[in-house]
Image (cartoon, rainbow, N blue to C red; front, side):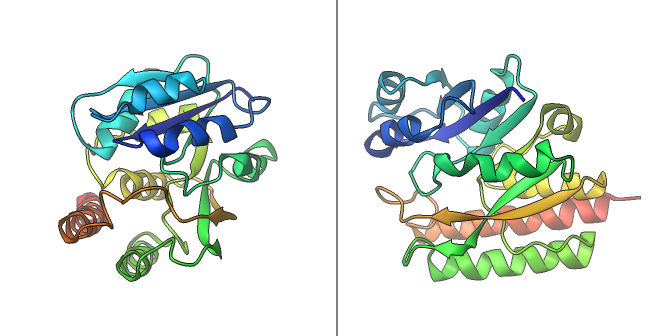
Length: 226
């Protein structure tokens, strides 16, 4: 399979070079780092490490991911992970195996099985628990985690019509995939303490905004179903 990896990043100069160098190049054909308007040289650091860099000035996690999708070339499978070194790119084969085997259309890395101490804050764990229970109740999909390290076939991704420009992007992908009847599988991954301070969980405002966008996205698509 031709696999292209998208890494959205905002002010991650301290971590992004190491993240890009950890990507197994025999598995991933292209590494696309989307510099989401950084002011610290994130794009330069990513390019120096061997990534292709796309600049997206419109802020937002979803905006960056969509810019990465627009930059795809020949990908059969698209993978996503964060640029703060919390996800381990060397584990990407764990996510690709269910797709290669024909068992899954969409694979999510579950951070809870091998979680480094302090890698997730109490508010992140609580928000994740609420969101996954709502998805189970409203969409009938049993998940333990909504992590950002994920992979799916390109045609499946394009069929979702992703549109969320902010923190709701990861949840939008899950609920739209559930509505379409995609086979969603979780695999355990290692989740490390990030390098630098999180723009989301590192501030009260970021945590509240992320929680708001996650929960409203889950409810909006459930209510919009015929």
